[in-house]
Length: 522
Image 1 (cartoon, helix red, strand yellow):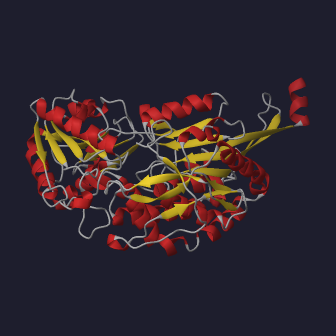
Image 2: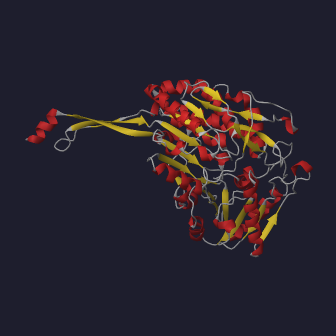
Image 3: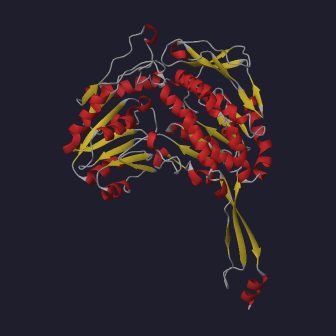
C-alpha cells in the first residue's frame, strides 16, 4: 500500500501553468494533467513536480502534481490554524449548510475525474467513477448528522454525594491531517474528511504521492467554496511532509494505508502527542458454512469481494474458508467467472481487470503465487495478459486461485493486495472460527449461510471491526455505520456519528449547587 514510509514517487524539475493541459488518448481521456497545492484559499504551483507514472503503460506519464516544500507544508498548517476559530464558532447546522454548498456540482466533472484516476491508479473506469461518487455520498450522509454533533448531556446532583450539576459537551480538536492511499483515494477521503469538518475542525488533505491527481482535483473544487484555510491540500514527497504529523499545531492525523505505514505514523505523532486514527491493512476471512447458498448471485458477490480493483482493497476477502462438502462448488464458481476476465488497460472498452498500481506489488504477488506452486498447492491461473505493444511491461498479472494451500504459506498469512485468493476447507464451525481468527489482522470478515442464527453466532465470534452476512467487500459497506479495525488493522472509527466523535473531545463544565453542598455539610 502507499503510505508515508514506502511511497514510490519521482520528482522532476519543470515549469507549469495554472491550468491543466489536455490531450486526447485512447479511451477519450485527458492526458498531461497538472495539479497544484491549495493553501489558505489560493492555488499554488511549484517548480518541482511529482511525475505520475501510468501503471499500465511503461514510460507514459499520467500527469504532474505540485511538489510541496517544507515551507509549503508549514503554510498549509498555518492556514488551517488561522481558519479554525471562526469555523469552530459556527453551529454544526451552519457548517453543514456551507458544506452542502461546497459539494454542490461536484459530479459535473466526475467523468474527467474518473479518467484521471484510472490513468494514475490503473483500475477500470467504472471503479474510478464509483470512487468519486462514494465521496459525494459519504459527504452528504455526514451532513445528515448535523443535529447530533453538539448533543450534550447533563449530569444532575447526587444528593449526599455529588453537589454539582455538570454539563458534558463536545468540542472540535483543531487542524487535522487526512492521509489517503492510492487504491480508493477519493472514496476513502469521504469516510473522514466531512466528519472532521462537520465537527468544527479545519483540515489538510495529503493525497497519495503515486496517484494524487484526481483526489487533488476533487478536494480543490470543494475547498474553493469553503472559507479560506478550512480545507487545504498538499502533494509532494513524503520527506517534506513530516510536519503534517508531528507539528504541535496539528491536533489529529487520520491515516489509511499499510500496517508498517501506520506504525510509522504513530511513532511520528508520539513526538507531539498528536492523536491518530489508523485504518490499516486486512487479511479478511470469508467463512462459507455447510448450508451456504452458492448460487450465481452469491458467487458474483464473492468474486467482486476478492477481485475488485485487482485485489487492491483493504476490506477485500483475502482468505476463503469453505466447508469441505462445498469446496468444489465455490472453486468452480469462481473459476468460471475468472475465465471471463479480460485483463487490459483500465480505460479500454471491455477491460474487467486493470494492472496493479506498482511494480513492486506485482513482484510480491508473483512471488507468493510461485511459492504456493513450489509448495505443491493447486494453483489455477486465468486470463491472458495484454498483447498490445504499448502495454508490454505494464503491471498486469493473471488472477489466480490457490486451492487448499498449507496454512503457513504467505498467500494465507499475509495480505496479498493482488488478484489471488487461497480457498481452504474446514470440517466444523469451531474450526472455521479458529482459522478465521488465526491472523494478525482484524478489519473485516463475512459469514455465508442460510441460517440467520448461525450467521449471528459465527459473526459475533470473528475478531474484527465489521462483518457481512452473505456478502463481503466495499460494494456493500453501510456508509452510515462506524468502520475500522482491530489488532494490527488499526484503531479508531470512521463514518457515522462515531466518525464525528473521533474528531471531537468532551468538555465538562461543573456548577456547584449550594443547597446540595449545604445538605452534605449537615
